[in-house]
Length: 123
Image (cartoon, rainbow, N blue to C red):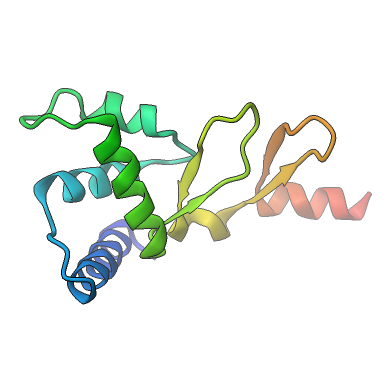
Protein backbone atom coordinates (compact mmCIF):
# COMPACT_ATOMS: atom_id res chain seq x y z
CA UNK A 1 0.00 0.00 0.00
CA UNK A 2 1.46 3.38 -0.90
CA UNK A 3 2.05 6.00 1.78
CA UNK A 4 -0.60 8.51 0.67
CA UNK A 5 -3.32 5.88 0.54
CA UNK A 6 -2.31 4.54 3.96
CA UNK A 7 -2.44 8.05 5.46
CA UNK A 8 -5.74 8.84 3.79
CA UNK A 9 -7.35 5.63 5.08
CA UNK A 10 -6.12 6.33 8.61
CA UNK A 11 -7.52 9.87 8.53
CA UNK A 12 -10.85 8.59 7.19
CA UNK A 13 -10.99 5.97 9.94
CA UNK A 14 -10.29 8.60 12.59
CA UNK A 15 -12.84 11.08 11.19
CA UNK A 16 -15.51 8.37 11.05
CA UNK A 17 -14.74 7.24 14.61
CA UNK A 18 -14.94 10.82 15.91
CA UNK A 19 -18.12 11.58 13.95
CA UNK A 20 -19.91 8.49 15.25
CA UNK A 21 -19.15 9.60 18.81
CA UNK A 22 -19.95 13.28 18.21
CA UNK A 23 -16.35 14.31 18.93
CA UNK A 24 -14.50 17.12 17.17
CA UNK A 25 -11.75 16.52 14.66
CA UNK A 26 -9.32 19.14 15.96
CA UNK A 27 -6.11 20.40 14.30
CA UNK A 28 -4.17 18.94 17.24
CA UNK A 29 -5.62 15.47 16.67
CA UNK A 30 -4.82 15.67 12.96
CA UNK A 31 -1.28 16.86 13.69
CA UNK A 32 -0.73 13.92 16.05
CA UNK A 33 -2.17 11.57 13.43
CA UNK A 34 0.25 12.99 10.85
CA UNK A 35 3.27 12.31 13.05
CA UNK A 36 1.99 8.83 13.89
CA UNK A 37 1.55 7.97 10.22
CA UNK A 38 5.07 9.20 9.41
CA UNK A 39 6.61 7.07 12.19
CA UNK A 40 8.74 4.26 10.79
CA UNK A 41 8.76 2.21 13.96
CA UNK A 42 7.51 2.12 17.53
CA UNK A 43 7.08 5.45 19.32
CA UNK A 44 6.20 6.77 22.76
CA UNK A 45 3.96 9.69 23.73
CA UNK A 46 7.14 11.59 24.63
CA UNK A 47 8.41 11.04 21.07
CA UNK A 48 5.22 12.61 19.74
CA UNK A 49 5.50 15.60 22.08
CA UNK A 50 9.09 16.17 20.99
CA UNK A 51 8.20 15.91 17.31
CA UNK A 52 5.26 18.30 17.67
CA UNK A 53 6.95 20.83 19.98
CA UNK A 54 7.88 23.24 17.17
CA UNK A 55 4.39 23.54 15.72
CA UNK A 56 2.13 26.62 15.92
CA UNK A 57 -0.10 25.24 18.67
CA UNK A 58 0.69 23.95 22.12
CA UNK A 59 0.08 20.34 23.02
CA UNK A 60 -0.04 19.03 26.53
CA UNK A 61 0.97 15.56 27.56
CA UNK A 62 -2.69 14.87 28.34
CA UNK A 63 -3.73 15.80 24.78
CA UNK A 64 -1.19 13.37 23.34
CA UNK A 65 -2.25 10.53 25.65
CA UNK A 66 -5.95 11.13 25.07
CA UNK A 67 -5.46 11.31 21.30
CA UNK A 68 -3.46 8.07 21.36
CA UNK A 69 -6.39 6.42 23.16
CA UNK A 70 -8.72 7.68 20.42
CA UNK A 71 -6.35 6.51 17.69
CA UNK A 72 -6.12 3.10 19.34
CA UNK A 73 -9.92 2.84 19.62
CA UNK A 74 -10.19 3.83 15.94
CA UNK A 75 -7.67 1.08 15.04
CA UNK A 76 -5.11 3.55 13.73
CA UNK A 77 -2.44 2.67 16.32
CA UNK A 78 -1.76 -0.38 18.43
CA UNK A 79 -0.39 -0.51 21.93
CA UNK A 80 2.79 -2.58 21.95
CA UNK A 81 4.13 -4.82 24.66
CA UNK A 82 6.58 -2.64 26.52
CA UNK A 83 9.67 -3.20 28.54
CA UNK A 84 10.39 -0.97 31.48
CA UNK A 85 6.84 0.31 31.84
CA UNK A 86 7.13 2.87 29.00
CA UNK A 87 3.93 3.17 26.94
CA UNK A 88 4.86 2.28 23.37
CA UNK A 89 2.70 2.38 20.25
CA UNK A 90 3.03 1.62 16.57
CA UNK A 91 1.06 2.50 13.49
CA UNK A 92 -1.53 -0.25 12.94
CA UNK A 93 -1.06 -0.26 9.17
CA UNK A 94 2.63 -1.12 9.66
CA UNK A 95 2.05 -4.00 12.10
CA UNK A 96 1.89 -6.58 9.30
CA UNK A 97 5.37 -5.57 8.14
CA UNK A 98 7.06 -7.28 11.08
CA UNK A 99 6.68 -9.45 14.16
CA UNK A 100 7.48 -8.30 17.66
CA UNK A 101 8.89 -10.94 19.97
CA UNK A 102 8.74 -10.27 23.71
CA UNK A 103 10.89 -12.23 26.15
CA UNK A 104 8.69 -13.67 28.88
CA UNK A 105 11.53 -13.47 31.41
CA UNK A 106 13.07 -10.03 30.99
CA UNK A 107 10.49 -8.23 28.81
CA UNK A 108 12.97 -7.22 26.10
CA UNK A 109 11.55 -6.95 22.62
CA UNK A 110 12.95 -7.82 19.22
CA UNK A 111 11.57 -6.93 15.81
CA UNK A 112 11.62 -9.56 13.06
CA UNK A 113 11.07 -8.97 9.36
CA UNK A 114 9.84 -11.76 7.09
CA UNK A 115 13.31 -12.61 5.76
CA UNK A 116 14.68 -12.98 9.28
CA UNK A 117 11.72 -15.09 10.36
CA UNK A 118 12.18 -17.41 7.41
CA UNK A 119 15.83 -17.83 8.31
CA UNK A 120 15.00 -18.56 11.95
CA UNK A 121 12.29 -21.07 11.08
CA UNK A 122 14.75 -23.02 8.91
CA UNK A 123 17.12 -23.52 11.88
